[in-house]
Structures are given as C-alpha cells and as structure tokens.
Image (tube, rainbow, N blue to C red; front, top):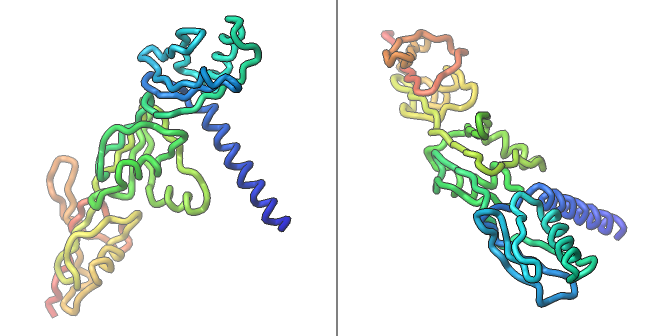
Length: 260
C-alpha cells in the first residue's frame, strides 16, 4: 500500500513538473485562443482570441498585450492591471489555452499528410510526425530538422528506441521544418534467390545486401560481384567491391553467373 502511494505521488509530481515546464516555455501569440478566469469573479470569465498584435480586450481593463508572454506572465499582467485600476486587489487569475494557433511547424516530405501544423504544448519530433499521419511507405529512416540556419539529421529508429526507453525526443519549436526524405534503396540482380529493390539499412555491406536478396543461388559466381554506382556527374561507374564494403543509395549490385 505504501509503495502504491509513493508511485502515485511520483507520477503526480512528474506530471505537475511537465505541466509547469509547458506553462513557462510556451509563448502566447497572435491567433491563440485563451480562457481567462478570475477567482470568485465568475462574471470576468471569458474566452478571447489574441489579435495579430498579440493583444486581448479584457473586461474592466481594456486592451493589454500578452503576445510573447508565458501563461504565468499573462496571469500576473492581468492581475496587476486589475489591481492598478482599483478593480480587484490581489486577483487570482488563471489563463488556459483553448486553441493553439500562433505557432506552427512544417512537416514535409514522405509523410502521409504533409503540411503546416499548430505547435501544441511541448510537442516533440515523434509527436509532430504522428500528427502528419506518420512516415509514408516511401519514407526512409532519416529525417532532417531545419531550425533557422541550422540543419540536423536524425535517425527515426534511434528516436523511437529512445522513446521506448522512456526518453523524450527533441522538442520542436515555432517555425521548425521537419523533412522526411525518400527511403534509400539498393537493387540486387543476377544470381540471387530474390532479385529486386530493397531498403538500404544503416551501414549495410555488400554481403548483407546479397543476404537481403535471399543469398546466392546455385548458379552464382560468388567472387564475381559488381556494383553499378552513379557518380556526381551522372555517369555510371562499375565497381568491384569487397563483400565487407558499404553499399550506397541507389547502388545496383549484380551477381554474375558461374561458368562452371
């Protein structure tokens, strides 16, 4: 019984800490719809949309600018204005978000529903990709996060593994662009059991690529493997690789037939 009580307290503490962090981090902006209430003054409870200037028109005190403020800062500002105007001393003001509209993130590339989405709470990369319908079948494991002049390449598989371990993925910010590139592919033909196109896995070698295609068939010349690789100028080069060499995106691996 004591253990359950401790676990419940820990859960409430963590949830409360996350909520407090969100209230302090999120900045109100134009278009956001907020609910404002003042304790013991039900007539002042209202739902307001911030103007393009980040202002709201609140009863008794008129227009005030809360754009760029956190929830706590907006509460303190309204309480101060109510006190300075001689309306309510020591007002207990509560500000909640009704609709997030001011901050947006673009999720583009190989996702089910690419577009611009409202940034809610302290959403992370995984949550924003899920909002866009998840990675499409044509999408790869890598994603690109563009934040201002900075670009960061991340592996989706590692983010998901970290999430399963209880870690939060990188939080997104207003104006971020998340781009999911096309799945990287290789092609394996010739004397293998299942010739065709396959997903290029991280650090895949020639041997692993051949194994993905079902391995050598009985007619294969195991020492006669070629890679046809496109160069930067568009020309196709023929490479004789070692089985431990890495495979690159769009490589065409050809296993020749044995003459004996």
